[in-house]
Image 1: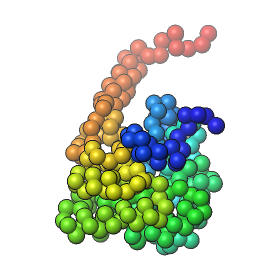
Image 2: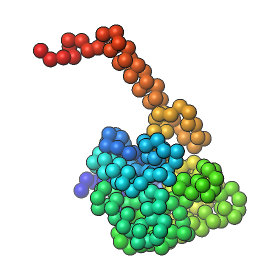
Image 3: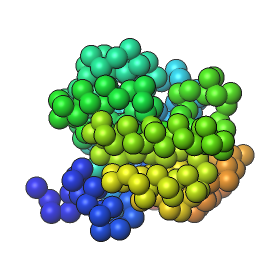
Image 4: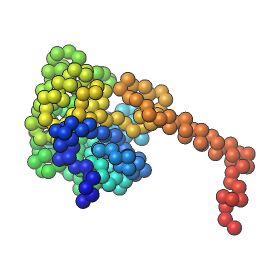
Length: 268
C-alpha cells in the first residue's frame, strides 16, 4: 500500500494532531485525478452532482444508479485520497437493512471507501448497522439538502437555542453510533466551534466557519464555473467559466475564418 494513502484511521488521527482536513467533490475521472494529484485528503462524490452535473433543481432526484456510475469513474482516477460517496435521497431512509444493501454497493461495486448520509438521531441505528458491517460512515448534520422541503429551502440551521441543542444532540449521537467524522453544514460559527471541541471525531465544515477540523466545498464552485452562484461561504479560486468560453470562442472564430486547421494539423 502507498504510504501516502489516506485512510479512515488517518483522518481521525489528523484531528488528534490538529492537522486540518481538506475535502472536495469530484464526479468524474479527470477531476478525481487532478484532486488526487493536488493532495486532497478526501474526495466526496456528492449527491450535489444532481445540481452540478445532471442539471436537476436539487439533490432529491439523484438515483443510486447515477451515484454508482459517477463513483466508479472517480474511483478510477484516485490513488491516495480517501473516497467517500453520498447516499442519495431514499437510499437509506427506509431503515438499516435498506441502507446496508445500498451502502454495500458503493463499497463492493463502485470502489468507495465509505459513505456519507444525512441526519443524526433519526438514523442512529442505520449508522450503527453500517459500522458493524465494516462500512465507514461520515455523518452530515445541520443544513441537510435532502430535507429542503421540510425546512423551506437552503437556510442556516441552529440559530435558535432549540435548534442548536438538537444539532448538538445529533452530533453526539452520530459520534456514539460509530461515524468516523461529521459534516457540519450551514450552522452558526459558535455552534460549529462548540461541536468541534466536544466530539472526538473530526468535523468537516461547509458554511460553518473556521473552527471545524476540516473544510469541504463543491469543486465547481471554487473554480468559478457559475458566475451567478455567489453563496457567502464559497471562495472562488479561479474563473474557469471565462477561460473555457474564451477558448471555445477562439476555436469557433478560427474555424469560421479558415484559420484552423492548417496543414500542420493534418497528416501527409
